[in-house]
Image 1: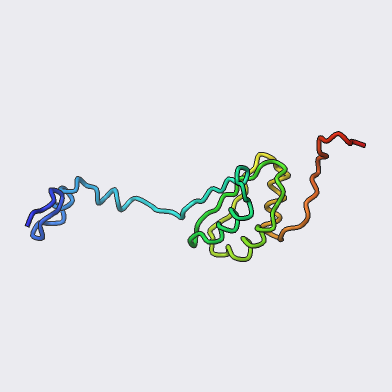
Image 2: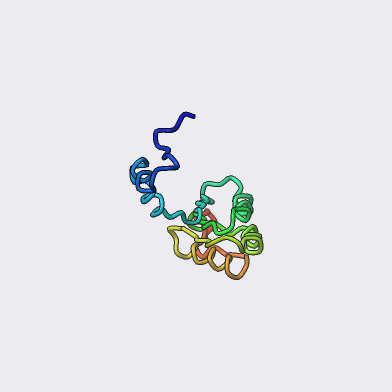
Length: 127
């Protein structure tokens, strides 16, 4: 039988095996694998509702980061995520506009409500 150069023989001591692996077993035991992190760029998504609904299907414990554009409206899919995403580790909203971020956080906590943009549009019919 051919042996891999890193394979230890059964009669060898654990110390010899450790030496054969170059001490890698000590390094491997120190590695910590945490929950997966899914970063969803809603500010660039073609279908924000679909992107949010897909997040509800991520494995248990996944941390979800929703990246939202300033003044981006909350979509109804947030309610789906609230109902079906209980198995997720944490959902975080990332946005450069604090007001928008708070509106999205409130939607995740309490459900989606109609959001009226606090800033008037820059359209031509200003009163």
